Image 1 (cartoon, one colour):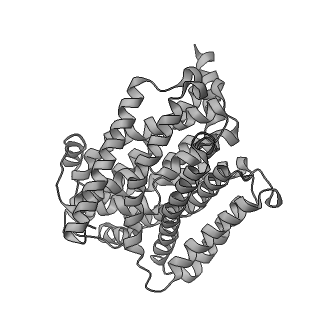
Image 2 (cartoon, helix red, strand yellow):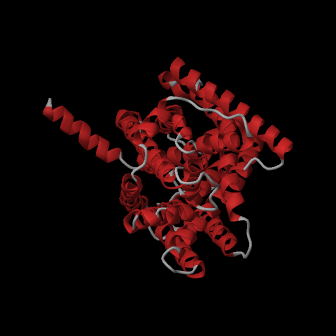
Image 3 (cartoon, helix red, strand yellow):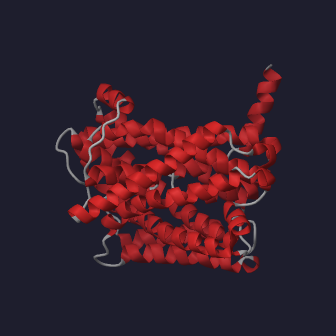
Length: 414
């Protein structure tokens, strides 16, 4: 028995990386801002989204990891082969626009978190951009993955911050199981943002590409699936504590909008330096990590979809388009943050809503692929997976239409 457990543990550690990193890094600067905004404006009420969103994330991530293990191809590759170049181009163009807003949001997170310590964004953003560029361009998949895994451990800062705030734990737990929905623009927009940032389209492309690049196949899929689920639960765990932290520090005192994630950290200052520094440090770590992975995910997706060489195991001269696209995303994302009077706050919230709007399109493509028996063989979706995934598509389309309608009606749902 112990020998079998030891073997399972070793196999789990061997495949550890893609699923855990993808899910945990989803708590990036845009996500942290969205969670903080949800807690600051609506208190503990949005916590009811935790369980269904985690289930949706697990289902979606497992489908993509299974496709990668069975086919040995990335999601963009499969979309091009099965749906043609025109569909692929349109999807990649939409993904590029959405991911560009996400990359900018993460450089804004770097700027905001470091400014709390008295360092100008005109120093922190260029230095951060150089660090993430060198990390990927000069590293290998194995070395980059190890750095990402170590960085993921620092998300525990949010758990400690929430405990130091001393929130109303009874209300937090009650709100986690009792749904509360307000039919107004801001609340519905936050719901779309919470789903969009938790089950972001970029995650599916990055996870499947990473599964393929790491060489995980169907023989290792059981361990890979376990790793994906652990990552999804860890993501939800962190998200819970960020919302609780903002609700306890801001909403319980005076419900209000916040202008960036750094403002949420400032709200913790009266409660003690430790909570303040931990939240700010966690924001910096999350932003820097995501500022590496989001451009990387985008470069993977676009190059795979259009048939160019991609992957950090390639040298620069062997995958020039991949590395130049990665570089361009970093330069533009960092440059927008340094642009005076650029509306970063609106763009960060918009990026999360755009994630939620694009998600149903990506989910439909994934479902059509994963249910093709000629492609997946015996590894096609079960009825349970299909019911959850298609229900997600219907709900997200409904929420997106509701937000769009309320936007036209009120002119300002966010």
